[in-house]
Image (cartoon, rainbow, N blue to C red; front, side, top):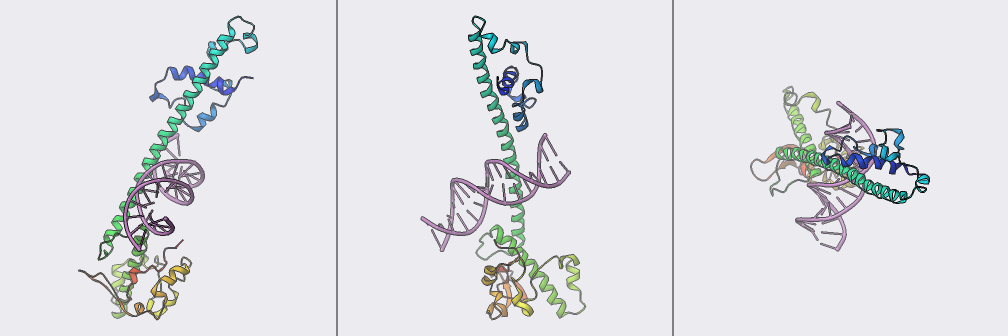
Amino acid sequence: MPAPLETCISDLDCASSSSSSSDLSGFLTDEEDCARLQLPASASGPPAPVRRGAPSTSRASEVPGAQDEEQERRRRRGRARVRSEALLHSLRRSRRVKANDRERNRMHNLNAALDALRSVLPSFPDDTKLTKIETLRFAYNYIWALAETLRLADQGLPGSGARERLLPPQCVPCLPGPPSPASDVESWGSGAAASPSAAAASPLSDPSSPAASEDFTYGSGDPVFSFPGLPKDLLHTTPCFIPYH
DNA sequence: TAGGCCATCTGGTCCT
DNA sequence: AGGACCAGATGGCCTA
């Protein structure tokens, strides 16, 4: 019984010999086309050329010289198979290269956004670049600290509404941030996203820590970021709002 | 040298 | 169907 794949590849032999390499999409596109190669020639596609309507193997053996023709046919089929597999590989490869390019570009955009985020965060004195995860955690804490500063300012100036003027109302509820460190320090890092290791690493988890009793300032140059009423080293710690793994 | 961070590749899944 | 998004794998670079 002749292999269907060989029959199809015999078709490909004719098709590929008349097609340039830049015109492959019409008959070989992807895995589905590859699967189609497994179908019998009668299942789809153009009718087989007369050449492939040659006598069957059993009849060919009866004709003098037919064995040579059969061998030649097999050689052609073998070459066609190699060619078609190479074409499939080439097409898959070009698609993969395009996908890789898009993915690279996507990651570059993501990194550009992270750089933009870094640029609006207070920079470290030694100009060390924050890692990606540090940038995200730092930004989270920084936003929380700013909001908390406004909240404390509001407490100091009842009815001033400074926070409401500076921050849209939805900004505050969207921060699942910690409670005021002064009032509920122990609950820092106790959220669902928190890990014990992170909580233990934070000086804020220890109410007796000196860090929890001093006003937070950030930066050694100009400007120095000051957050009255907030614990020192707030932004250097990672109070687990972004889960650890 | 081990561990952390990062860029890239890759295949799978979802969405338009 | 093609692109976006995601997560895992891998290898390079750097630092303690």
